[in-house]
Length: 437
Image 1 (cartoon, rainbow, N blue to C red):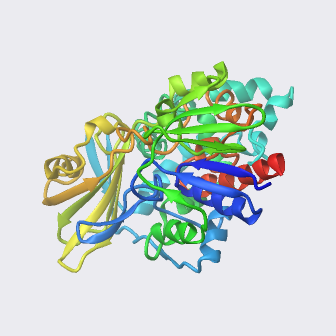
Image 2: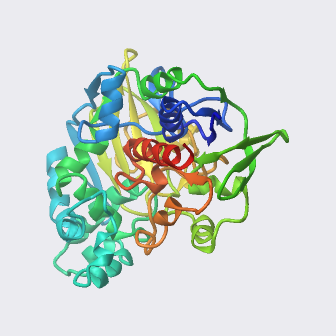
């Protein structure tokens, strides 16, 4: 008899999971709360250009991402190099080249990355150090420190070095870097050849021609199964042999297994029967350190610039991305706290730009508040102190026909880029196929 699986969520993890399952001849239904596919990847024309409201950059060193780029014959292009750099430290704005600004971060980044080679010789086996008595205590201790704690432990670091690193990780963690786990930064280093330059290149340098929609729309087009949009799930009953998914309209879908790709920030929109066990429930209650936002700012004139500012700045990392035909520049900026932003208000954009330059005129702003979005409740998954060793891995096994996929649970890139979502969609789908066939 044909086996059936329900996939909850039509982001990258859900789409590739459905594609993988249908290759096995499994009957699949995808249910998505939003009125579109793509999840936290969303390409839309705003401010006169195609902008990424969510996930943005790709790279050939992201294996699962590059496989999809190859499959769908997409092309990449480079984000513009910035001619000028501005950084805020000690209440003063300094200027120079982007290379000079990066150079001032290098010593601090190397300190933050300390231990990455020892802790993560195999980056996809993230918790191997816990099984090594010679490393276990140091590994757990690093999880309870932040990247900034690593710098504060060494009095040789200047305030300027600390400020630049705090600015970088405020954007990288999309949350307060003083609350984030230092192990997350070290793990990112291990996925980037233990190099700041390589990490920045993977996360901030190359984009897809036509945008992320060129991937998620093509994956969706390859699905022969139904994809139900605007269809929230309210409850999931799961046993060792089957699952029942209840939709907001009251409809129930019986299936052999269910794959949930909903991120931690939105898992409370679903009632689970039996309830999630305490280790999982604690993660849902505590949430991640993902409290920030991304804003696109349009300014008059062409300005090739990068900028950084530590806490408590509204935006901590800023970069010119698009030079429009009407003589404007569209700039992207990231900050650690979404409630400091009014994403559609030019006055908010002007306040951000004034942190570094008060001579630029902002004409428009846009973005999407993923933290306030009920179907995500967060931007990308960034881990609080203590969560690297005690959180995400609990969702890899439930003992029933309930499975979790998505970048929140990835063994490789967790958040910031789409690679972890693709990895977990494929991996989880194949685990389910083995289980039910």
